[in-house]
Image (cartoon, rainbow, N blue to C red; front, top):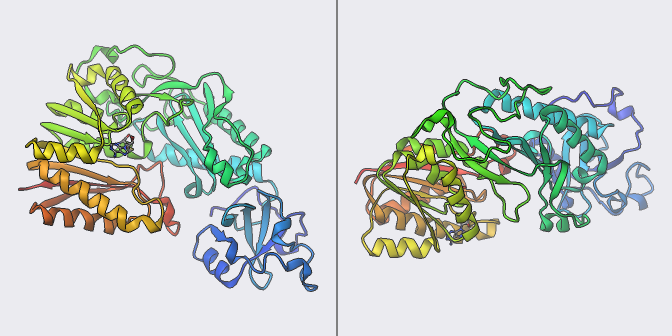
Length: 475
Ligand code: SAH
C-alpha cells in the first residue's frame, strides 16, 4: 500500500486514538503479511471474548461492539500495531486493510487515493473517454468502484465503510474537482447492500443533472493523446468535455465526424445510460480486447454473447458480415442503437442481431453446416464460486467445442472467460481439450486479460479475472 499523507504523524503504538483495535490470529497475521488486504472473521483473535479477558486492553473491544464500517487499528497476536483497516460487521471479510499507518482522516485518504488512481489512468489509458477510474482493492480503495463514461461518472459502493456519509462526500467532492462532470450517478446493487446490512437505496443521480451520454473508445486517430492532454482541463487535466471527435454530451446525431466514411480510426461510439435497469455502456474491461480482436478478423464473423455489441461493432468494418447473438432482448435493442451510432464506421454494413440461447444456436448452426471465419465467445461468468468450477469448465469446453466445429480453416477464435475461479492455465487447458476433441490445431496469437484501467494487483489474485485468448485455427 502506498504511503499516506493522511496518516497520523505520531508513532502508531504511542497514539491512544479513539479508533477501536482488532487483534489478528496467527493465520490472520500471515494473510496480512502476504500482502492481501482481506482478513476473515475467523482469523480475528477471540473476537467476542476480548472484553471478558481481564488482561485485554480496553481499546480491544469485542468485535461485536465495533461500529459497522468503522476504521480500526489492526494488531498482531502480540499486540503490535500493523496498520489500519475498514471493518464490516456483516461480511465474512471482517476487515480490509487500507494503510500500514494509522489513519485518522479517512475521507482525506480516500480523496488522495482517488487522485492517485486518476494519475495512473492518465499514464496508461489512452484513446478512450470511457474507463474505470477506481477499481476497489486494485486501487487500494476496497469497496469503491468508479467508472468514467465521457462526461458522466458512475459510482458503486460495496462496503459499510465506503457508504458512510463523510466518505461519500469526499468521493463526490474529489470527482467534481478532478473531472467537472455533467453528472455523477450511483449504481446500487440491492443484493450487496443487503449482504452488507446497509439500508436499501435506489440507483440515482448523486450530483449534476445528466445521467446518459455517448462514449467513444479505441480511437486511433489521436493515439498519442493521453487522457490529460485535452484543451478543457480540470484540476487533474482530465478532459471531460466532448471534443469534435470524441463525441459525448448531448450530441446524438449519427453523422460522420469530419465527414469520413468507413474510418475506423475515429473509434466506436456506444450509448451509456447510467440509470437504466440493466448495466449499459459496454464492458469497459474488454475495451482493449475489442481492438485486439478486430486486428485479426475478416470474412463472416459471429459474436456470441454479444450484449450491446462491443466485439461485433469493432469487428464489422473488417468483416463482410457479422452476426451478434445474445439471450437478452434489451441488450440487443441497445446493440442495434449502437450500430446506428456508428454508421460511418460500418460503411453501410448491417449487423444481424439474433436473440437466442447461445448453446442451442451454436448446435443448430453447426448442424446446418454454417461456417465462420471468426467467432467470439464471451459468456457470463460460469463459475461464480469455487464450487461451480467443474461445471464451469465443462460449460466452457462445450462452448469452445461447438465454436471450433464451425470455424473455417484459417479462422480466428476469440474466447473469453470472466470467471475469477477459472485460472488462466485452466482456461487454456479447456480450450486445448476442446481442440483435441474436434481435431483442430490452434495457434495462440494473443493471451490477454482485462484492460489496463482494471489493474491486476499482485498478491491480490481476485483483482485479475478476465481471460481473452485469440487463436488462429490452422486446419
Ligand atoms: N461481449 C459482451 C459482454 C457479454 S456479457 C461485451 O463485450 O459487451 C454476457 C452476455 O451473455 C450477456 O449479455 C447475457 O445477456 C448473455 N447471455 C447469458 N446467457 C446466455 C445464453 N445462454 N445465451 C445467449 N446469451 C446469454
